[in-house]
Image (cartoon, rainbow, N blue to C red; front, side, top):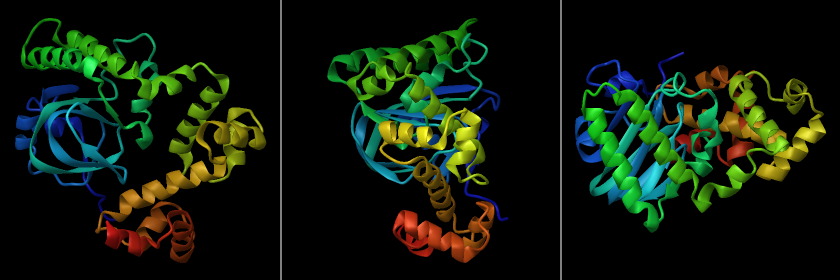
Length: 289
C-alpha cells in the first residue's frame, strides 16, 4: 500500500515539538504553514475562528463559505482544505486528544459537544453578534497565555478553551443535539457511531453492531431513522464511502489499492458499491475533485 496523503501530528505545528496545545492568531499561523499540503488530515482537534476574510473551507467534501465570526471544528481524521480570497485573520486552536484527559474527571466530557463528533453537519457555526466581544476576549486571553510561561499556563488554557466551547454550545445551532444528550436512544446512537469508526472496514451488517449494543437490529434501525433519517445500514455504508472519498483525493492510491484497503473482495465490487452510494464511479469522483 502506498503512502496516504499527509496526516499531520501536532508536533508539526509546534516550535517546541512537544506541545499538546497551540493557540495563535490566524494570519501569522497561515504564513508559517504555507508549505502544508492541501487537502490533509490532522491527528488532533483543529478549530478556526475567522474574524476577517472570505473564501471557502472544505471539510470532508462539504464546502462552507468563510465569513467573519464563523467557526470551523475538525476532529482527528477529518480531511480539510481551504481556498482564501484575499487576506484572512482570526484565531486557530490545535489540541491533542489527550490534552483534557488529566484535567477533567469525566474523560468523555468533550463528547457532549456536537462539534467534536466528527459529523460534518456540526463542523461549522456562526457566533451570534451578542457573543462577538466575549469570543474575542476569550481568544485574546488564550493567545497571550499561550505565548507566556506562567506557572499555571496549561491549566488556564484549558479553562479558557472550555469557556469558548460552552459559549459556542449554548447557541441555537446545537441546542437540539444537546437536549437529546441524556436520551437513552441518543446514547445508543453515539455508541453505534463509535463502533462503526472502529469496525467499518470489516463489519458492514447492522446485526453485528446491534449485538454489541445489546439491542435488536430492528430497534437499532428505528433509532437511526428517528435521529438521522437513515437506516443503520446506510450509516455504515456512508462511513465506508467517506473513507473511500478521503483516499481517492490522494493520487498515489490506485482504485484497486483503495478497494483492498477497505476490505472489498475485488475492484469491480468496490466500484459498483461506490457508484451506488455516491452516484458516480470512483474515477469520475477523482477527476471532479
